[in-house]
Length: 376
Image (tube, rainbow, N blue to C red; front, side):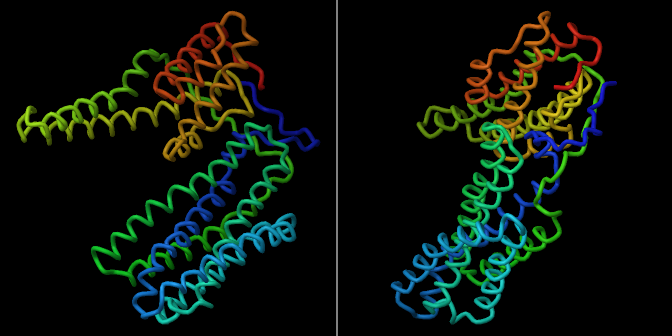
């Protein structure tokens, strides 16, 4: 079996697959997202904190002022410290923000003080700006291609903008319907503490030297591309049937009340089964492609599974797989190359169809090249 050469003394640029296969990268992403959850909830907590201490709502302007100034200070802090101490750049504002949360929990009257709100807004924005500048600087230093840089930078930014919103919705529900502002504040503190621990326990966020060789080949198993697409599309079909029955029920011309729970349970069961199969497919397909030849652009099977479980993870996987298989198809005349445009179209519109295209490409390469290929 061909393996990648790891004895080259000249440092080389990292690929996206090598970057996403490291615990350092995902430790940083986890710390940033956890911190963003705690910081974003501060805005959900603010009206309750202010009303409980009897302060005027005008005091909330201090939080906005601190946030605006924090972006400027955060960018300056990152430019000065991030090149040499990236983890320290992130840890400083995060630790101070965590201490401020603890102070607000133990001294509820602080929620009505303009100085306290200004301080918390300042720390939150400093961390956000420092995180963006730090990750951009580290990734740019590894000379990633434009597309790899965009994908690697997009993931933490995307999660910072989406995950905290769901947590904030839960926090608002607890405040309004359960009257648990202290519980929300405690949850914010727990998230911040976990973020600090993850950031401190994660290896240094730097990618010096060459990436470690990660080559995990698996034996090839032929699969029908049509079957892969059908399994992937089944949840959408069953959900559509359930939704149509639900709409018909609302209009007074639908099925009986007993059928809707059955259809709902069936749609959920099919969705869980299809999701499990697609995760298994992602694991197998990465190992089988590695078995056809080692590639620095290819994720390991385990890394592929972890990315699959994240929002937009399949978009990243299909993009990376498509690039690897297109390059191999071009260099192998016996195997028809993938269409870049159609793969991109189906990746956005219907990912299971894109998966079927990739499975077909793997089948063709296996029959065209029974021997392992050289690394690309």
